[in-house]
Structure formats: structure tokens, C-alpha cells
Picture: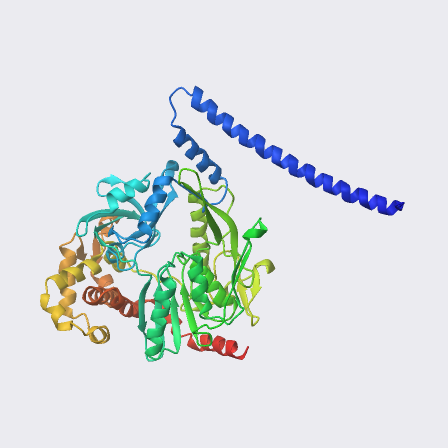
Length: 566
């Protein structure tokens, strides 16, 4: 059969393309082999010829760390011993100070130990540690440059033993030292669940772990049995966890078929879509989701999905922006490459991840997030109460504007920008001193220990205590005496010396802050008497984001009606 000239040309083109692709693949393969051989050669030269004997294991781990530094801040190497500790501790309870932590690159390439979040109900939370605190000293020992063995050696320990932990905190010019009494660490993830009023339920989820969905559903059923018709779902300071739990919990609010989240990767087999299934338990009733700058990863999946589908009103501050998917690749010695393989996107197409430069240091990466928080605060400068995001964001590139199911505009650019933004509450100088010295929580401990009849008087009366107890003048005077006996003075005029100022309460400022301080004392008394569950109903009375959210139920209800008519 004789082929026509055009067909011959076409076949030649196709053949040329195929040959070109194969040649490119071969070239790429050859280049990778050459580069791998170069690494092996360097490894051998160093091992054989360096002036001192080099440990080959350390050399290989340094090489892996070097390769990962050129990627993204969440791709990390976990050596075999650390990986064993992770597996041993994942399900177990333990005794210590009770924090989730991470290592961040600090000055002179020495890591600093950062509090990812204090475990709710644990000793660090009770003492006053906050997410974002950088631990710089433990006792008389510097914590700069620590690795996992030092953390376990100095921070874990028998229940009842004390340890002084010094942190640097954003907004504080000098380090703050907390005395923490080690204890058994609770591992529940739903840390608060109660009725706010006759129809409004409240659930606070601290992280997404294997038990989270079951804990969440137990709390939901209990609240519905008490008459819950609308829900405040608090994801503030929730640093994330298992994506599966985020998807299952989101599913309870979304109708069958709705997208929860999807991932995109360079490799097609890593691309995934996750959709809701039929049978959600709370698909058509009002929901408000609370978030802040420490809400990350799985928290952002939930908030983004419910916002994009008009299923919940999101209130608070822009979330952290952690939208990279990691997978663990085990190496021959039991160590692990925890490497980013894809990115998370919300149903409307928003990339959750905050922009970053490949290979930038942890310090630069987290500094960029701090800058984003500062930008949001400047955005709200002079604003009071909850502010509609679309009213203050100004000019936004079309590429960062997205549309919800009903046509509302939501915004990309990193993290989840709430529907309503609430400015950070300004902390007075007096309250700053109270918190920095843990005077409220430590006084509550001391007061109950010194008044044994108080436990008996309130036994079984948790709701009544929350509703009726007041910090009397007598109790507040006892608080002031406690402060005076614990390295704090009460004066009429602020000292000029800044270091003295950290240990001073100015009478006029303390009087102005007294309602806030009293509420914190009451909250810690409730926690001492009844447990962590009793803490939140009290502290909500001085929580600006919570109180502003409670004024937005008409907007949340409009979304629920919209969902019901779709």
C-alpha cells in the first residue's frame, strides 16, 4: 500500500515527537544517575580522606537534611530513634508538662523549641503557656539547639515534680518564666462540650486524632439530647492532625456529594478528591466556626469546606495556612522521610498553603506568617467588634477571589479568611503582668488548697457555680496578697525602669482590669473544682471572638436556610 505524502509527513512528525520524548526521558534518567553518582562520590571521598574520622551515619543524615532544606518547610527527616519514640508515644499516656512542640530554625542555625499547642487540661496549659511560645531555657539549662532526647530528658518526668520553663512570647520584650508541675497528660481531643443557652451548643476540638470523630459524635448526641438547635464549633488553636478525621467531621455538616477537599500533585496518582456521603447528622441547622492564626491543616480543611458550601459562618482571624500534604517514606534503617507530595485545595479552589519560597529557612517561613498576622491586624486597625471581611480587605487580585455555592465571595492568598474578622483583644498592662506570672491560675490553686471546705460546699453544683459564683472583695484581696508574696508589687505610679514594670501592678490599671482578672480567677477556680470542662463556660464571658460570634446568629441562620432550599 502506497502512503500519501501528507500521511508520511504526519507519521514522521509523530515518530519524531515519540523519539524526542524517549530521548528526553533517557537524558533525564542519565542526568539523575549522574547526580546520584556525584553524591556517592562525595560521600566516599569525605569518608576516606577527611582529616578526621567521620561517622558515616551522621554524614548520610546531614546529606538528607541538606536535600530537604531545598524543598519546603514541612518536608523533614525523622531518624530511626525519634520514629520509635513517636510510635511508642502515639497511643500512650505519659507524664510531663503536656505540650505538642516542633523545632524551628533559630539564630546561628541552632533550633529553638516552639510550643505548637499546650495539651488542654495539661499542666502547661494550666500554667499559662500558649501556642507560639519559644522555649529558651529549662531550669538553668539553655534549650537553644535542643533535639528530641533533650526535650524528653528535661520536660518529661514523674507526676508532681516541678520544672521552671522560660519562654519568649510575641509581644513581650523579655522572657517569661513559668513554674510547671508535671502531671499525667490527658489525650482527649474534644476538650469542651456544653450548652451555652437552651438552644446553642458548643464544642471545642483541640486536635484531629484517631478518636476525634467518635468524641465529636458523642458530644453532638449529648448536646442534641439537651435541645441543641445550633452549634458553635471552636477550632481556635487547633493545629490539625489526621485529615481523615477532618473529612469525617465535615461530612456531618454537608449533603451527599459535596466536595470536602481535594489535593493536586505533580504525580497524577497522588491527586485525590474527598466528598461527603449521605447521612450527615447536622446538615441544615446553623453553625458558626471559630478560627484564629493557630488553626492549621485539618482545621483549615473543615473551615474551608463549610465556608465554601455556605454551610457555616466562619468567625475570628485568618488561619495559619498549612496546606501541604505529607507522606512518610520509610528508609532501610527505620528512619523516615516525611515529604510533601501534594497541596490541599478547598472546594471553591482556594490553595490553603501560605506562599513560601523553596529552600527558605524555617525562621523566614514563620516570619512571613507573622507578617501576615500583622497585616490582618493593620487591616482591622481602628475597627471594633466583628467586621465583615469583604468590607475591609480592599483591592484583591481576581486570582485570589473565589465564589461559594451561593455566589458569596471568599478570598485566597493563604489560610482561610473568615467571613467576619474580630480584632485581637488589647491586653492591658495589668492583665499582661497577671498572665506573665500565672497569678490567676496559681492563686486559684493556692486558694482552694487553703480552703478545704470550698470543695465540699460546691460538690455536684458545677452549673450553679458557673452561673452564680462571684469573686468577692475578700477573695480579690486574697489575690492581691498572693501577688505581693510572689515577686509582684502593687503601686500607685508605674516605675520608669522597664524590668521593674514587669513585676508591678499599677493600682489604677488593676482596678480597670479587675472584671477581666476576676473572670480568669473564677475560670481557674472552676477548673480546679470540676475539671477542664468547667473552665470554658466561664472564660467565654471575656472572650471577644466568642461574644462577637454570638451576635451573628441571624447571618448563620440565613446560610442554613439557604442550604435547606438548595
